Amino acid sequence: MKSLQLIFIAILSNHTLAEVNEAYLYRTGIWKTKLIPVCWENEGFSREKQLVKETIERTWQAESALQFYGWSQCTANSVGIRIGIGDTGPHTKALGGV
Image 1: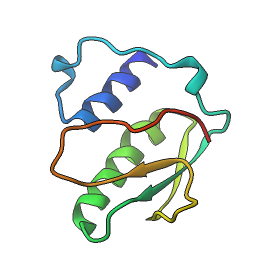
Image 2 (image 1 turned 45 degrees about the vertical axis):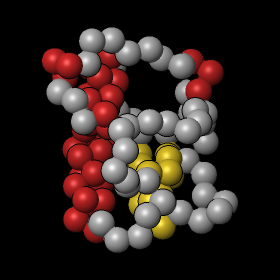
Image 3 (image 1 turned 180 degrees about the vertical axis):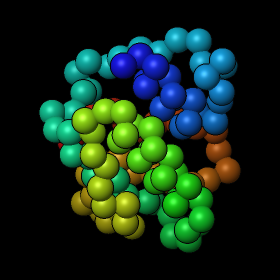
């Protein structure tokens, strides 16, 4: 499971696995469900969004019991993973489960 965590961190942080030295598990933030909703903060970027979705399906979804679904435009009430595309470094605004 640690290798999956590192792969996910590498994908999201735009680093190679060799550059990711250590990761920490936020135990109280573990989702209680294996069905994780995903939505996009931005409009447009269809090619980039498809690449991210395919990468998550090929890695996390293929190698774990997690299932990511939705992949539509976020609304004010959207829960789960909210992905924003921007010219910024990787970051998280909040941790927690669905």
